[in-house]
Length: 511
Ligand SMILES: Nc1ncnc2c1ncn2[C@@H]1O[C@H](COP(=O)(O)OP(=O)(O)O)[C@@H](O)[C@H]1O
Ligand SMILES: O=C(CO)[C@H](O)[C@H](O)COP(=O)(O)O
Image 1 (cartoon, protein in one colour):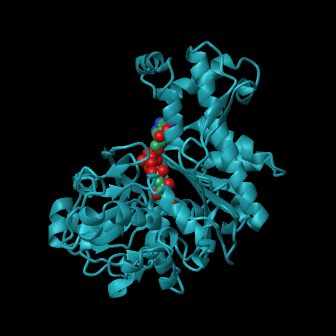
Image 2 (cartoon, rainbow, N blue to C red):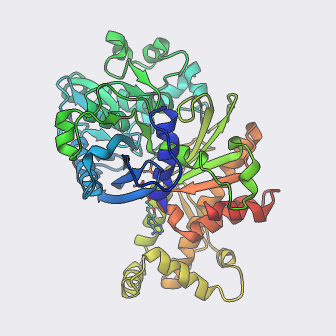
């Protein structure tokens, strides 16, 4: 569901946004194929779609993560590129490669560091250059982001008033202050991961407006603000017209250079020269897909409503809540407003919860009854989530499943609060624990965690609405949208807020 949705959306929105593709209708045989590569936190997926946007093939490959210290999360750009090659080769098996017209990437907004010859540089004290990515969820730069926020620089009003430790400026400052000789002085290129991938494919160092606006303080109309970089102690990045962090900026979907280089073509098993699109951050690729989704014909209440009434909720390791507007809306604690970073000509606001899928996995896998759960789910050939959902159905008896948690509550900010409180110091909490630790307890804890995440989404919606958004429908995609309980709890918990609960629920479920 997740990937079909994400990539269906990518096809309909991403390429069209760049004007690079027309989608013919009718039942004709596929004449053209397009490859989309989605780099999430835990895995890389490729999809092959035809000119109608129909998913033809899909492949997934896990990627490595390292946590050399608590709150330090690293990956390897070589490992990720190798995984992109594996999945791309798989999805194009058996088709005529000459029918492939284009390739696009999206990826998490992690920071990739390369030297002046484009070789990986270590982002750790151990000097392991294989680990050259500071991941988006890395929280090492706490002191740096605190000092950046103390400047109260005007660019901060475009990130919800408070910069997140998950953005690139604090991470760059951390590298400068902590790895001066081994990394900072040797670095030639700092890329957002989506832009690294498009460079790797084409040799073009142009950055996507999506990544620079959403994570690097670039303003779509004004460009870089020298005074910000000077004020935070990163004035060296201004040199040579910002060549280390990007001085050519293209809208997502724009065609890059001469397309796929012969070297990258060999790696990926694709023809050299095919069009490669400027990338998107993974959440924004999913957001574009669902915000642009054609929902006509399903009898949904949202059918006649404007796209600005949709909230895309992209839920994987984390959840991102993306809404668009014609005019800028400033929402305290919610990232943005960002202009043209996802839908050309529209502003976007992005709320988020730093860990959602990761939190559910953490709670479930850390419980004493997890081995029993695993054994029982395996015996039934089910995922642990499907097993837990049916177990909850069994124990709820006649009452609605949500009522099983009247005595057990979770506060979900185990990795700080991204939105709307924008407080990275917040921690998680569970109240109502008992001495028993059986499968019933695990199932109820799992439910309480999902409910807590859904309440977090409700808080984000309330903050966005109070600032001027008018949201009627949630569109969910990502790994967690495969979980019907997660979707239902979001419908129940966000829908009762003075809305037409029935229509809200059905829109969420259908999507
Ligand atoms: N079949 C499933 N049922 C329920 N939840 C799932 C399922 N598959 C994955 N998930 C959840 O989705 C999360 C991963 O989502 P995904 O979109 O693949 O993540 P990412 O893009 O961050 O790599 C996991 O943490 C897990 O909680
Ligand atoms: O901040 C982001 C988007 O703006 C991160 O890229 C995103 O939260 C990570 O995505 P995922 O949870 O799907 O791996």
